[in-house]
Image 1 (cartoon, helix red, strand yellow):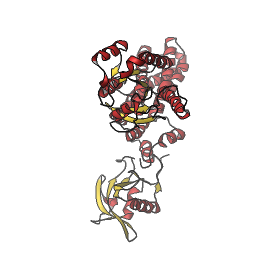
Image 2 (image 1 turned 90 degrees about the horizontal axis):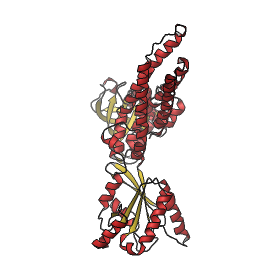
Image 3 (image 1 turned 30 degrees about the vertical axis):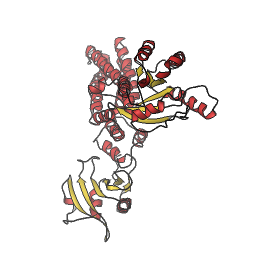
Image 4 (image 1 turned 180 degrees about the vertical axis):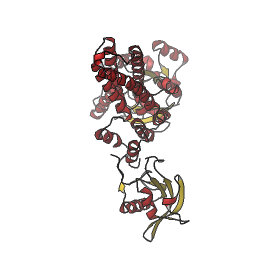
Length: 462
């Protein structure tokens, strides 16, 4: 059911600023806006053309609240598909509250979280995957996540799914028709063409499912744990990567008692660096808790950066190799970057010796910021950005991923049925199930609980 009432909300962030935008949408939005607006040229908002701007004042009885600019968008040519006006006022929190309270008294109600976008979906302005991309676009904090959200909002993903669904639906209709003529034993659906279609759908679904591994990393960032013994320069490295004094640096071993996290964008990809407590045997209760957390963070991280003091390699090289083996054995599937810090203190012969002992090592000086860019490039190499560079569709949404997995399972059942000459009525059931999961992605199949869960995560005003 499409609501007919008018809703209002602040479309800009709450708090004081230069300007604020208050959005109204609904059948009576322009009428309500006109009842509180006094144009400097005595214009009636109801008679103005869509997509026009008007200067005037918001007036409560005879009291002027603010000088504003009003934008008019008449349905269906608006974001929500309904009559919509946006009031650009001065950014005083008092002014914002006064105008919103006035509009509530005039017949609006406060919008729920994501209700403007929900109405856009209900009015056919966006499908469900495009609506979800709006939230992703708002929360994007790096180039890659922004690029994926824009592609999805423009319909790249939903168009691909809709095309496959339409082709499958056509064959489903032919198979249903066969059931109506079951006694005549007639085949309307060409089995060879149907098999080719199923192969193509299976290929596309597998590609989209595989893309989720990259998409999830791009959307949420890559957690990188920086580990090593105390006082080898982990905090200094974090500061060098972030180019700020984020972590405490001290000559005293065991300074970092807890994990410190911060984010950095490298090549358009977000990385979340975790500076952990130094790993060593200790009797200090607080430091022990920090070391326990270190191993918890390694478990959660996707990449582990192991840092050691290269100037101490002569003395502690054997111990270092033992620690490396311990981490490799405990976390065999995690990419491990081995870094020798304080390389500015090494002689050429020492450098050659370390590289011969540990060929994959990266020598840097976090204090002097030497080799930090090489580390960034190595971290970036762990992300498969090929699909992103080729502008392929990439899945970032867990709900879409789940529906794609279920659709693939049903398609493989249909394919098996076709290859084993399963009866058309049983095959039709599996086709219907796969169509259902396709529809769940784009919103052709929905329920109130699903919509409630999706739009509850939006900000109010969008």
